[in-house]
Image 1 (cartoon, one colour):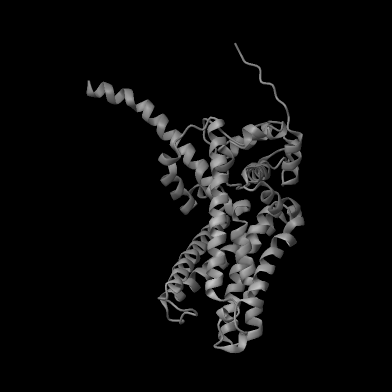
Image 2 (image 1 turned 30 degrees about the vertical axis):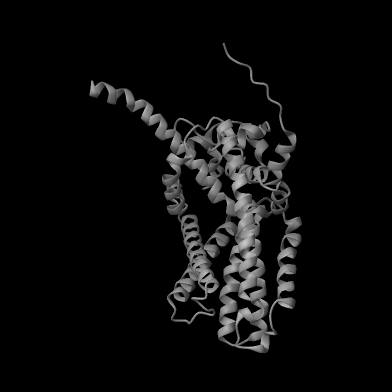
Length: 380
């Protein structure tokens, strides 16, 4: 006997999805073309047809715990082939943004980062922090050799960024714990531990994106951005710890291996962000209002690497006034990038890794159940 499903549409969720970039959601008439053409959808659980109808009906509780949202890489094939122009790829992107908002800790931060109205407030806090440091923490800029630390002392910056890192780890940890509970409530029973390493490999190689037709530009943009950023994060941590314990002193010499590696990573990162910016301008110039969430992260990250390169070039050129001004902007952008990481597209990598790990864990569990009887019979 079939069980009736009582649907109580969450109309506020529907409006939120539409505002987040899913404005063509209601055009979908469930022809299933999107699921048929998707190269990434599993045969047993194809998407995004199911997610489209659940979004139309405002079934928020189901969607926020659906790992299939994170299996999609928005390659655009479903959007290109949709006969109604419902843009399923954009809808799934909007749903992922809503998931991050829904699980954000504290919750109001997720709402602030999701739209452009709060951007002045988001950047005002870092501006005030670094203005205060510049005015109170260090000696006058002209009182010694031309160094960034003259205006922004390294111990003060280290204390600030360690405090911010602690907050980010806490916020991201709470958000991912909430997300994991939602996955479990939605029926995703796979072990994250069993699927974590394969999921991490997929994240590091963007292997799934290579399965998307015509997405080489996006693939290389993601790869260059991810590895360039990872390299800078690594060398920044090494140099930060080195200066903290007194074994390194900045600015590093141009011949220092850390300096060479950092400059190489900066060039790779800048190339990657520019590729992604060019691709986004090409595909969404007429739909910018629905992509503010993406633009916040991408433009902030591009600004970080561009101002970092510029401030270093100005230091070498001994242009003190411009150097300190550009470095001030650089620090503001870095703090904004990290402080708001749990609420921006930065968080995508972690949410996606957890979701994919759950799916892989479930596949491993199913495979072990299928093969167990055969092993028993062979032993008998």
